Amino acid sequence: MTDEKPLKSALELAMERLRKKDAEAGVESRPLTDSQKAAIAEARNFYESKLAEAEVLYQSKRRKTVDPTDRETLDQEYRRDRERLTSERDSKIERLRRAQE
Image 1 (cartoon, helix red, strand yellow):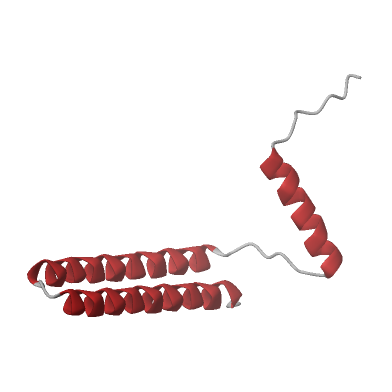
Image 2: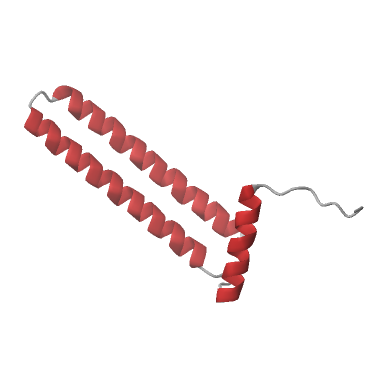
């Protein structure tokens, strides 16, 4: 047995199975272009800063609020904003991934 191959991790084995399954299903794997990678990184940075801004504003407003009802309203608005920004980010990244040059 001189052809011993290095052992693979569980992650590597799982990824191999997924690639094989995708190939059998006809799913095509295209690597991202450098411009797509840059655009995706820019989108992530933009939305990361928007989320951080929303967090700072939320914390600032929450510190000033004493009424439990108002705090609950702030909490709900903040959760909605986070979900909206996260959803926008994910959809933009997906559009960038699918874009062909």
